[in-house]
Amino acid sequence: MENLTGIERELVLQYLIDGNVPITVTPIDDDDAKGKVKPASTSVFPIAIKAEQQKVLRQGIILLTNPSESVRNFIGRNVKVEFYFNRLGLYFETRIKESSAGLALIIPSAISRIEEIPTQGRATEFSATLYYSLSRASVEKDAERSIHIECVPASGYDIFSKPVWKDIAEEAQQKAKSYLEEFIVHARKQGVAGNGVQLIPVVRFLAEENHVAKVQSVEGRAMPLEVLFANHERIVFGSRKDSQSQSLKEGCEYALEMLFPMKRPLNDRKIFTTCRVESVYSDDEKTTSCSVCRYTSIQEEDLRFLYEKCTNEKLI
Image (cartoon, rainbow, N blue to C red; front, side, top):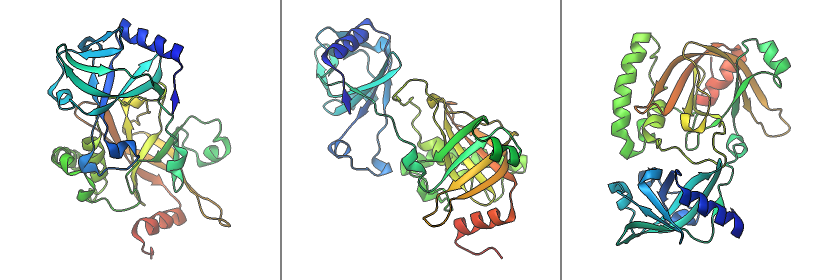
């Protein structure tokens, strides 16, 4: 955590006073501050507050005008306030209080830069790269120069295990069920339903994900695609439009490299294949999407490797 200097804080305060700065507010509890991971059923989401719904006083107080009921529910709670200052993601922690002038957020002396979220640590067991070139030879030869999309495992998803309904947070299951009914009809019409297991992580991602844009360390930076599920037939990617991650095009074919780091003295396992985007599904707000891709070419030994990894059974 890197705090701003006194002069930097004054510049940011003046920036907030001048207005046109939307913020997001997220409640934090003692467990959050201590770094404890809370179960999904108790997770909380940020709430966006538009610039016109706030007034920033010279004394360093943000007054909220006509706050939503969701924000009022945070009265008396500690919250994290996040916003962009010249594309730089910043945050501070404070408490929402009720005053005669309305709800108030006191800006503390410490304002911090939002830290970069490392993706490397999430890819210790698996990572993938999508290429626009379809030639396996060209991918292997010109990987450094090819236009490509990095992909990392989605946090909280066991991507090589069979998805089950209980993976979805209880409060999101009703929304997920609505999506599933709609998507099954679409998949059957397109003849790509299969056993439908690939749709569970899709509806989970769309139903569970909060649609308020997450404040990044730098505004507008493209983020990797997230791998939600993979087996020996398909791979599923998730994309948040607010993170500028690249969306895949339905019907298009991509080259795909999958990397499985192995313990020494074994060499890392690389799988080169091609895949076609069978379907792209979006949430109701069109802020989050999932791409279901089916392998169009894969070597027998790679298919066997993926099958055994996903099922713990030998492919006869």
